[in-house]
Length: 115
Image 1 (cartoon, rainbow, N blue to C red):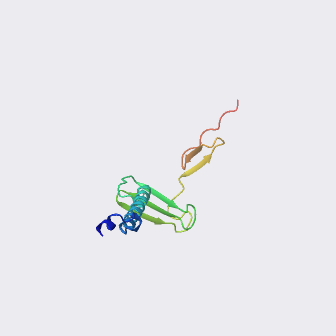
Image 2 (image 1 turned 90 degrees about the vertical axis):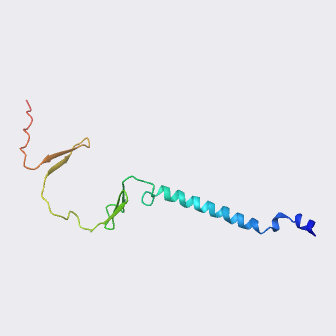
Image 3 (image 1 turned 90 degrees about the horizontal axis):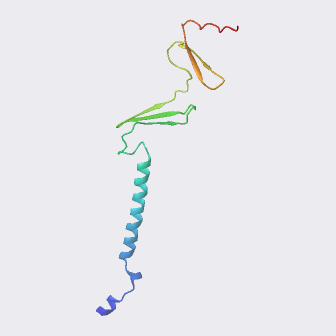
């Protein structure tokens, strides 16, 4: 009778299904670790400062700023140009695409001479 136990086929061994489950769990854990490593906000080993903007230019826009261990979240109020301030100058876009800023309250540049 003991000889019969030694010659059992491996397909009937219940421990093999447990080994297969352990392999599946190892693959799932590896996938989760890769996901955490690629996400800048939840990666605990990432020491860089990160800024994430969701829905830019829309009323539902949010800005997430991570500085070290601190995460700040800002939501758009939907108002355009809100706040206190005064006009600081004028910006002009040139034909080549460059921008020129002229501060407010300075004297105007002299007109170029045509002769």
